[in-house]
Length: 336
Image (tube, rainbow, N blue to C red):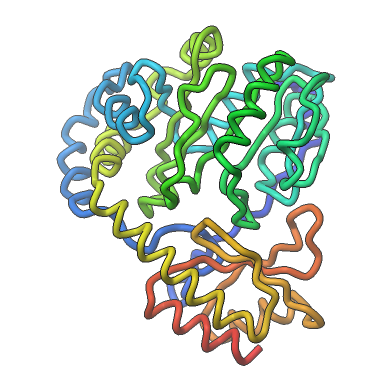
């Protein structure tokens, strides 16, 4: 990290409400958690009295099975964002250029800024057509946040090949890919994949995730990773959650069904962007975004104003939750 760049960097706004009286559609988190996580967490507290095994064998084995890669290619991290930082700070130097999609997750550009490097912004749906040469890294969010667009896997692999030919690292953020049946790029040469357990497994406060890489980059990430960077309860619960195949299948089915239903009903009042993710991007038309946010919150529902995403000025984003909760959101949005 470039100490001089820190002075000019800012924070990035995110969704999420800490008001217990508000139904939160502003954060894209599964409202359900896998069975057994409480028992696993409580059992792990006894082991938390000593340092964890810094090799995290059980967590890495579960992660490898989860994304279909070799366990020794998994680098545990305390959340997906920590993995993104680790990847960027071990690759990007001051003055470098990084291909960054927009509108997309604002932390990519922030992490590039913190390295004293420059973000070369490109529309998210044109990333795979961009020339990766003369860039130290290219970033792809798959599916993209906040639009929900998912890249074609073959096209993404071809872009990875062009990145390798240009000696440009491809960082693929797969935070929402678990909601789909799509294949991960984990283990692809020249690619660093970042995964989070926050979204699919409904545990943002647990802070567990991992990177997958190969070759020299894998060695770099292993070396730079902080010792004991994943708490014992987080490692235990994470390993347990990633092996709950029935929960994952049920979640995918519910989200796909509810997303389709919500899209159809919301289309009467909003322009709804097609999505493969557990959220929908809505264009509010002539309405004022701040007014929409205020009116929905006054009725006990929080949604995400999307004007903080580069390139969006009259959009909001809503998560896909349970059928009953989605019914409440639809009723509220039908009146704003």
